Image (spheres, one colour):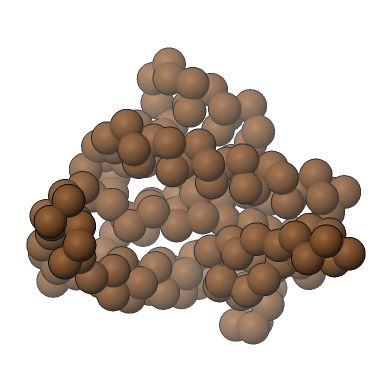
Amino acid sequence: MEKFANADASVQRDIEGRLIEEFKKAHQEEFGFAADDVIKGRKVWLNEEDNDYMLPDIYSEKYAIIGEIHTHLGSLKPAQKHKVAADILKMLTLEKACGKELKKYIIVCSEKEKEQLTKGSSHLVFTIKLYKINVEYYPISADLKNKLEEAMKKQDM
């Protein structure tokens, strides 16, 4: 617990921002969206009467896109697998609340994580395939990778 108490998530936030920019570049031609069409961390209302909302990492109402970003290196531990499952539930909940199909993404910066989420016979792989969730990998620089490794050690990930 001591490690986590001193943890700083600023490295992960920085990487999230960079991964969003990579996502936008990769899909700009496909969707033709401008920078403001894909929003990070904005409240998306599920039910305005009850003030129910969520904060997806990537969202565009205009292009029916929702995505979650994972800034983790290496294979996922059980807690990170639960986080992925919770993110899938978040995407499916918003899709149901919107009443239309959303293009769903999980963005990662680890080839091992992408492989773990797309290959094999786990329930997460099955769920990702069943609900047509796109898992996309965008590499980060060696400098950012080193900073992320240090942050993960401090957070005991």
